[in-house]
Length: 213
Image (cartoon, rainbow, N blue to C red; front, side, top):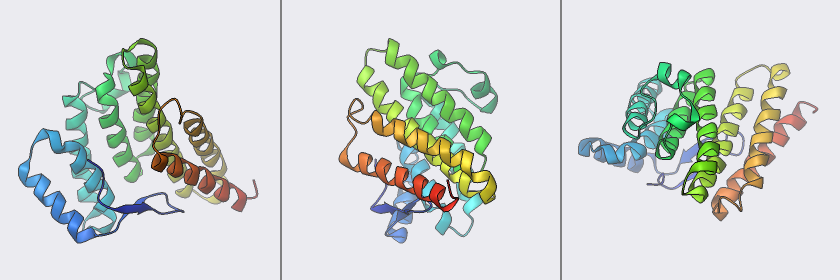
């Protein structure tokens, strides 16, 4: 399930939902249903709507709780300790998308070290399954998504530090975005996904230019 109509802010690279009341109503409807098959949509909505919430931290806390549940149900690590000791071959390909959603939530909570751990695990898992899984195309598609979303995390880290400390993070974000762009054909990325990567590359280059890089 995709997010309701939204756009990506060209500076923060955050999703901005167009009709917040309607999205909140959808979130409440999904919560009432309570089915595990709706966890992905609930995590994404909680994250995207947190900035417009009366209590953003509580909303992101709930997103994190549901995110770990989704990862566990997909056969991934059950908690932070398990994730820190997990190997790529222990993470099913079906757990990669939930891991990415959870990492994105941790990123929004500015818990970057924990987010980076999960993004790294997801990337290792996509590459492992790209060599060993029957569905290589699916693994490549998830690798594309992982590179893009990890780039967003590095980019946000750059915005969270003083300007003189931002350059390495922006350089890493740009490298991840560029690699995602290189993988776009093999991953069969949609036109919308390609455009998002293009804009992310431009945003990282713009921030670097502002720093005189």
